Image (tube, rainbow, N blue to C red):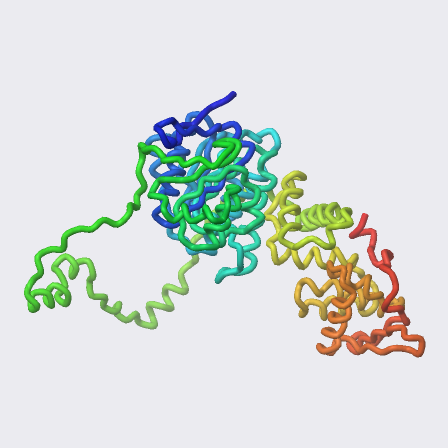
Length: 504
């Protein structure tokens, strides 16, 4: 079904329309400096398409909550746990309700984590609920930054991974991303590159004008035109808009944002200097009543305290019914290990980033309906590093193995698996693993990285490395009191390092 959305007017007064069905398949990128009319454009798009398609708005400033009064959007307050936001997003897709995720009042890192959890829930919905959804993300440079900022690396990776899934893989799941940013230079290129439709507004920096001209297929000498665009004027291009760059003036909207552009207001008549000082430094009467003087509580005697302690404790309240089904810890760990083994079947899994693998892990857990809270990114990084190394952490009865596990606990998560592989070779008297084998366990193709890892362990006093007369490497562990058999550092990858529990 073809639905044309009226976005405003072209030059000459002709209506500027947007093919909604084509937009759902090709996504949209909006760019413009602050005050160029981006939020006005998004509001026009949301209002015109509200009767035709489900909408989810990621709103960092709380500007779009006014859609609820006119168009029935449900406002989702983001001050919830990440797991709760993920479950809410799944129910949103199931019941096809238009919502506004209000992130107002949260700091940037909290906004990134909440948006990542919410987008992950939309992305991981059951296949039966893959209905078309218009996912609008305002200030997208906050959630898909081009470079690391002041937020933690974990939050940035989670948010960037969720935005990448939305723009790169969301189409098959019915998710159509519409992202708006103040500066293209601040937006991750792999996110911006997936959009096929563009609406470019006013911008002043040379790098942003050059990127806008490149995206629109214009000569860079024509990029100066972006400086002259008025508020609410954009240049459109894309299969849902126009096959050639087209100037567009965005039409009026029926709702308004809670925050507006600042307007000049006449100053009040200036009081005398003495009166001005009184206005500033003398508290008003209602202000005094609103801030009562706090007096310390009267002292309590020792006898009263002992009497209160001697009284019987009140009966504890019955624990509330857990939100998630109760599952035995051993059964939960076994299901998690099963998902990890499933990921490890892919030979390329050892060389993917942890953030990408973590998103794949969460999807597989939901597909298999693994109950209980999912692993955090830090726990997943440690578990996967050990599983990728092919190490069985429960080698009960093997002399020295519990001490090796204890020693590995003091290392970074991504190095524990490497240490345990070498320690296992020392405990069993097997040949020292080659550089290629150690690099594969770490998730790298570089043999020099393997040599640096062994040097790191030696600096920490965990291993002592020596070479026999044939140039073969021997690694000894002073703490475990054992050493490996001689092994060729330049040898091939030893696939026998993988245990059946981690590689089947």
